[in-house]
Image 1 (cartoon, rainbow, N blue to C red):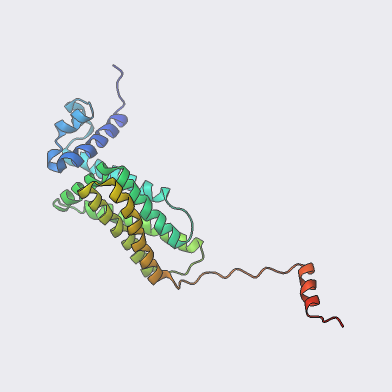
Image 2 (image 1 turned 90 degrees about the horizontal axis):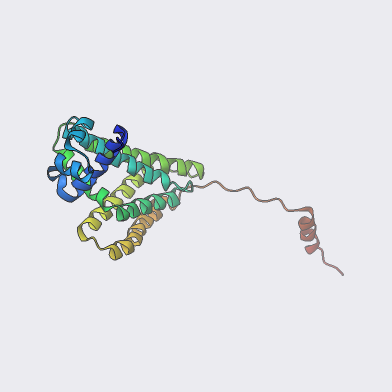
Length: 226
């Protein structure tokens, strides 16, 4: 049997850990279960990850990278309102398509809060920073004057709405209902943006100059013929 490279084996074990955490929680995701799910010897897991905590740290990094990739993939490079809607829709659809990730994130955040250090805060802050940078760039590129506080608030609103959607989906697992609720959640975001971004100053496009022919017709229209 061909030997699997260590990097590939680590990736497989991290993916298996996500599935086991989603299915059994952090405490139930034993190294033995993770190794079995990855179809790897237990000794290989211990060779790739010295401790369970090191493995879970790698899982945190993997989940964070996945979330960041979803955000950057849904950066539509448009105005701030369109971009915010695209980010929120993209994250909700990602949760819908990847329930294991959603469940694992909830478990990991709860577990991290009981540990020393601030791993949960680090993960959240990185996600918020990525989202905020996208929204800020959207406002700048569209020539919209949005103050930093409003960008911060919009980032929080998008994050909170997506988190609430994810938790509801994990509890009820009703795909048809969740798909229709995506539009409902987007409507909440639209209402907030209408109230807080409705009067955002936008650049005024310069008026187009009339062609000589159009100018001549305009002058002729003012001349009365006897």
